[in-house]
Length: 266
Image (cartoon, rainbow, N blue to C red; front, side, top):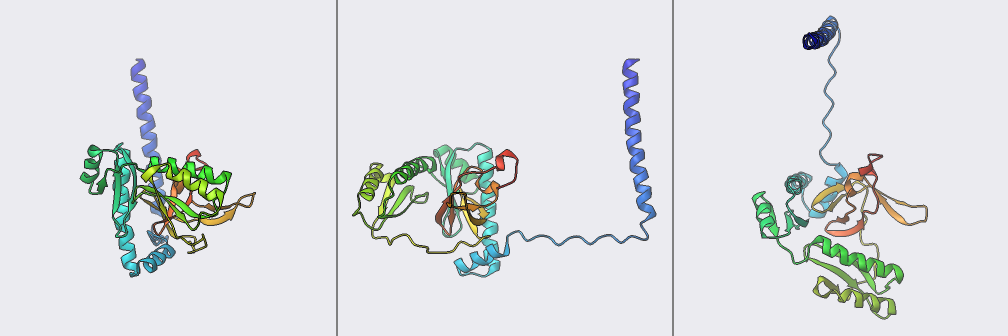
Protein backbone atom coordinates (compact mmCIF):
# COMPACT_ATOMS: atom_id res chain seq x y z
CA UNK A 1 0.00 0.00 0.00
CA UNK A 2 2.82 2.38 0.77
CA UNK A 3 4.29 1.90 -2.68
CA UNK A 4 0.87 2.42 -4.30
CA UNK A 5 0.34 5.80 -2.57
CA UNK A 6 3.69 7.08 -3.81
CA UNK A 7 2.79 6.10 -7.35
CA UNK A 8 -0.56 7.89 -7.17
CA UNK A 9 1.04 11.02 -5.75
CA UNK A 10 3.48 11.08 -8.64
CA UNK A 11 0.64 10.76 -11.15
CA UNK A 12 -1.14 13.69 -9.50
CA UNK A 13 1.92 15.93 -9.80
CA UNK A 14 2.35 15.10 -13.48
CA UNK A 15 -1.34 15.71 -14.18
CA UNK A 16 -1.21 19.04 -12.37
CA UNK A 17 1.79 20.13 -14.41
CA UNK A 18 0.06 19.23 -17.66
CA UNK A 19 -3.01 21.13 -16.52
CA UNK A 20 -0.91 24.22 -15.88
CA UNK A 21 0.62 23.99 -19.34
CA UNK A 22 -2.79 23.63 -20.95
CA UNK A 23 -4.12 26.65 -19.06
CA UNK A 24 -1.18 28.72 -20.25
CA UNK A 25 -1.82 27.55 -23.80
CA UNK A 26 -5.45 28.61 -23.67
CA UNK A 27 -4.54 32.04 -22.32
CA UNK A 28 -2.00 32.51 -25.07
CA UNK A 29 -4.54 31.48 -27.69
CA UNK A 30 -7.01 34.14 -26.48
CA UNK A 31 -4.58 36.90 -27.48
CA UNK A 32 -3.31 35.28 -30.66
CA UNK A 33 -5.47 37.41 -32.93
CA UNK A 34 -4.52 40.77 -31.38
CA UNK A 35 -0.82 40.50 -30.53
CA UNK A 36 1.95 40.69 -33.13
CA UNK A 37 4.92 38.43 -32.63
CA UNK A 38 8.10 40.42 -31.92
CA UNK A 39 10.64 40.36 -34.70
CA UNK A 40 13.74 38.30 -34.05
CA UNK A 41 16.71 40.41 -32.89
CA UNK A 42 19.53 40.86 -35.37
CA UNK A 43 22.32 38.37 -34.87
CA UNK A 44 25.41 39.87 -33.24
CA UNK A 45 28.55 39.79 -35.39
CA UNK A 46 30.91 36.93 -34.63
CA UNK A 47 33.85 39.34 -34.28
CA UNK A 48 34.12 42.92 -33.18
CA UNK A 49 34.23 45.21 -36.25
CA UNK A 50 37.27 47.02 -34.86
CA UNK A 51 39.15 43.75 -34.57
CA UNK A 52 38.25 42.73 -38.14
CA UNK A 53 39.32 46.11 -39.50
CA UNK A 54 42.61 46.02 -37.57
CA UNK A 55 43.42 42.52 -38.81
CA UNK A 56 42.54 43.40 -42.40
CA UNK A 57 44.85 46.41 -42.25
CA UNK A 58 47.68 44.39 -40.72
CA UNK A 59 47.42 41.59 -43.30
CA UNK A 60 46.70 43.91 -46.21
CA UNK A 61 43.53 42.03 -47.14
CA UNK A 62 39.81 42.77 -47.35
CA UNK A 63 37.65 42.60 -44.25
CA UNK A 64 35.89 39.56 -45.76
CA UNK A 65 39.25 37.78 -46.04
CA UNK A 66 40.07 38.81 -42.47
CA UNK A 67 36.84 37.23 -41.22
CA UNK A 68 37.61 34.05 -43.15
CA UNK A 69 41.06 34.00 -41.54
CA UNK A 70 39.51 34.40 -38.09
CA UNK A 71 37.06 31.59 -38.83
CA UNK A 72 39.89 29.24 -39.82
CA UNK A 73 41.86 30.12 -36.72
CA UNK A 74 38.81 29.68 -34.49
CA UNK A 75 38.20 26.22 -35.96
CA UNK A 76 41.79 25.25 -35.20
CA UNK A 77 41.44 26.58 -31.66
CA UNK A 78 38.39 24.40 -31.13
CA UNK A 79 40.35 21.34 -32.23
CA UNK A 80 43.20 22.28 -29.91
CA UNK A 81 40.75 22.75 -27.02
CA UNK A 82 39.33 19.28 -27.67
CA UNK A 83 42.81 17.80 -27.54
CA UNK A 84 43.41 19.42 -24.16
CA UNK A 85 40.05 18.18 -22.89
CA UNK A 86 41.11 14.70 -24.00
CA UNK A 87 44.29 15.22 -21.94
CA UNK A 88 46.63 15.00 -24.91
CA UNK A 89 49.92 16.29 -23.48
CA UNK A 90 50.88 19.51 -25.23
CA UNK A 91 53.53 22.15 -24.53
CA UNK A 92 51.87 25.24 -25.95
CA UNK A 93 50.82 26.28 -29.44
CA UNK A 94 51.31 29.23 -31.77
CA UNK A 95 49.99 30.60 -35.03
CA UNK A 96 52.29 30.94 -38.02
CA UNK A 97 52.14 33.98 -40.28
CA UNK A 98 49.82 32.15 -42.68
CA UNK A 99 47.34 31.40 -39.86
CA UNK A 100 48.23 27.75 -39.24
CA UNK A 101 48.19 26.58 -35.63
CA UNK A 102 51.29 24.59 -34.70
CA UNK A 103 50.99 22.53 -31.53
CA UNK A 104 54.01 21.63 -29.44
CA UNK A 105 53.49 17.98 -28.52
CA UNK A 106 55.16 16.36 -25.52
CA UNK A 107 56.21 13.24 -27.45
CA UNK A 108 55.71 11.32 -30.68
CA UNK A 109 52.49 9.73 -29.42
CA UNK A 110 50.96 13.11 -28.60
CA UNK A 111 52.12 14.48 -31.96
CA UNK A 112 50.30 11.64 -33.71
CA UNK A 113 47.08 12.53 -31.90
CA UNK A 114 47.50 16.20 -32.79
CA UNK A 115 47.92 15.37 -36.48
CA UNK A 116 44.92 13.06 -36.35
CA UNK A 117 42.91 16.10 -35.22
CA UNK A 118 43.97 17.91 -38.38
CA UNK A 119 46.55 20.22 -36.79
CA UNK A 120 50.28 20.67 -37.37
CA UNK A 121 52.47 19.16 -34.67
CA UNK A 122 56.09 19.08 -33.61
CA UNK A 123 58.02 17.81 -30.59
CA UNK A 124 60.11 20.74 -29.27
CA UNK A 125 63.27 20.43 -27.26
CA UNK A 126 61.83 22.58 -24.47
CA UNK A 127 58.27 23.84 -24.85
CA UNK A 128 56.21 26.52 -23.14
CA UNK A 129 56.55 25.53 -19.48
CA UNK A 130 60.35 25.33 -19.59
CA UNK A 131 60.62 28.63 -21.46
CA UNK A 132 58.25 30.30 -19.00
CA UNK A 133 60.45 29.09 -16.16
CA UNK A 134 63.55 30.65 -17.74
CA UNK A 135 61.77 33.91 -18.42
CA UNK A 136 60.48 34.04 -14.83
CA UNK A 137 64.10 33.82 -13.63
CA UNK A 138 65.05 36.73 -15.89
CA UNK A 139 62.02 38.70 -14.68
CA UNK A 140 63.17 38.29 -11.09
CA UNK A 141 66.72 39.28 -12.04
CA UNK A 142 65.51 42.47 -13.74
CA UNK A 143 63.37 43.43 -10.75
CA UNK A 144 66.45 43.49 -8.53
CA UNK A 145 68.45 45.64 -10.94
CA UNK A 146 66.98 46.92 -14.22
CA UNK A 147 69.25 46.18 -17.21
CA UNK A 148 69.27 49.47 -19.13
CA UNK A 149 70.91 47.87 -22.17
CA UNK A 150 68.16 45.27 -22.65
CA UNK A 151 65.24 46.33 -24.81
CA UNK A 152 63.02 43.32 -24.15
CA UNK A 153 62.94 39.61 -23.39
CA UNK A 154 60.11 37.22 -24.14
CA UNK A 155 59.13 33.62 -24.81
CA UNK A 156 59.18 32.75 -28.51
CA UNK A 157 57.39 29.45 -28.98
CA UNK A 158 58.11 29.38 -32.72
CA UNK A 159 61.89 29.31 -32.16
CA UNK A 160 61.53 27.40 -28.86
CA UNK A 161 63.68 29.99 -27.09
CA UNK A 162 63.54 32.96 -24.78
CA UNK A 163 64.62 35.90 -26.92
CA UNK A 164 66.60 38.73 -25.33
CA UNK A 165 66.93 41.95 -27.34
CA UNK A 166 70.00 44.04 -26.47
CA UNK A 167 70.94 47.60 -27.43
CA UNK A 168 74.12 47.86 -25.33
CA UNK A 169 75.99 46.26 -22.45
CA UNK A 170 77.95 49.10 -20.93
CA UNK A 171 76.22 49.02 -17.53
CA UNK A 172 76.85 46.43 -14.84
CA UNK A 173 73.17 45.45 -14.52
CA UNK A 174 72.97 44.57 -18.21
CA UNK A 175 76.15 42.51 -18.10
CA UNK A 176 74.87 40.63 -15.06
CA UNK A 177 71.50 40.07 -16.75
CA UNK A 178 73.11 38.71 -19.94
CA UNK A 179 75.36 36.42 -17.93
CA UNK A 180 72.30 34.96 -16.22
CA UNK A 181 70.49 34.64 -19.55
CA UNK A 182 73.40 32.90 -21.29
CA UNK A 183 73.71 30.40 -18.43
CA UNK A 184 70.67 28.70 -19.98
CA UNK A 185 72.63 27.76 -23.10
CA UNK A 186 70.83 27.68 -26.43
CA UNK A 187 67.46 28.00 -24.67
CA UNK A 188 68.12 31.76 -24.75
CA UNK A 189 68.70 33.65 -28.00
CA UNK A 190 70.40 37.04 -27.65
CA UNK A 191 69.71 39.52 -30.44
CA UNK A 192 72.13 42.47 -30.42
CA UNK A 193 71.94 45.84 -32.10
CA UNK A 194 68.33 46.48 -31.10
CA UNK A 195 67.11 50.02 -30.55
CA UNK A 196 66.14 51.20 -27.12
CA UNK A 197 62.65 50.21 -26.12
CA UNK A 198 60.15 52.74 -27.40
CA UNK A 199 56.48 52.67 -28.32
CA UNK A 200 56.32 50.99 -31.73
CA UNK A 201 52.61 50.37 -32.11
CA UNK A 202 49.33 51.22 -30.49
CA UNK A 203 47.16 48.29 -29.41
CA UNK A 204 43.62 49.71 -29.47
CA UNK A 205 40.85 48.30 -27.28
CA UNK A 206 39.04 45.54 -29.14
CA UNK A 207 42.12 44.48 -31.10
CA UNK A 208 42.90 40.81 -31.52
CA UNK A 209 45.38 39.28 -29.10
CA UNK A 210 46.53 35.68 -29.00
CA UNK A 211 47.68 33.33 -26.25
CA UNK A 212 48.39 29.60 -26.19
CA UNK A 213 46.81 29.20 -29.60
CA UNK A 214 43.63 31.07 -28.65
CA UNK A 215 42.19 34.40 -29.72
CA UNK A 216 40.68 37.06 -27.50
CA UNK A 217 40.06 40.80 -27.60
CA UNK A 218 42.24 43.41 -25.94
CA UNK A 219 40.43 45.20 -23.11
CA UNK A 220 41.58 48.66 -22.08
CA UNK A 221 44.58 50.25 -20.41
CA UNK A 222 44.51 51.42 -16.80
CA UNK A 223 46.75 52.05 -13.80
CA UNK A 224 46.65 50.40 -10.41
CA UNK A 225 46.77 52.27 -7.11
CA UNK A 226 50.57 52.39 -7.32
CA UNK A 227 50.54 53.95 -10.79
CA UNK A 228 51.64 50.76 -12.56
CA UNK A 229 50.24 50.34 -16.07
CA UNK A 230 47.92 47.35 -16.45
CA UNK A 231 45.56 45.92 -19.02
CA UNK A 232 42.00 45.13 -17.95
CA UNK A 233 40.25 42.54 -20.09
CA UNK A 234 37.75 39.69 -19.90
CA UNK A 235 38.62 37.22 -17.16
CA UNK A 236 38.28 34.16 -19.38
CA UNK A 237 41.03 35.57 -21.61
CA UNK A 238 43.62 35.25 -18.85
CA UNK A 239 42.19 32.45 -16.72
CA UNK A 240 45.53 30.60 -16.73
CA UNK A 241 47.58 33.85 -16.63
CA UNK A 242 49.17 33.43 -20.07
CA UNK A 243 51.47 35.74 -22.00
CA UNK A 244 49.58 37.80 -24.56
CA UNK A 245 50.67 38.63 -28.09
CA UNK A 246 49.58 41.22 -30.65
CA UNK A 247 50.50 40.61 -34.28
CA UNK A 248 52.93 37.91 -33.15
CA UNK A 249 54.69 40.11 -30.57
CA UNK A 250 54.20 39.47 -26.88
CA UNK A 251 53.17 42.63 -25.09
CA UNK A 252 51.69 41.61 -21.74
CA UNK A 253 51.21 38.78 -19.25
CA UNK A 254 48.16 37.88 -17.21
CA UNK A 255 48.81 38.50 -13.52
CA UNK A 256 45.43 38.19 -11.83
CA UNK A 257 41.91 37.05 -12.69
CA UNK A 258 38.68 36.57 -10.76
CA UNK A 259 37.09 34.55 -13.55
CA UNK A 260 37.70 31.17 -11.90
CA UNK A 261 36.17 32.44 -8.67
CA UNK A 262 32.80 33.01 -10.30
CA UNK A 263 32.77 36.75 -9.63
CA UNK A 264 32.95 39.61 -12.10
CA UNK A 265 34.76 38.43 -15.21
CA UNK A 266 37.93 40.53 -15.22
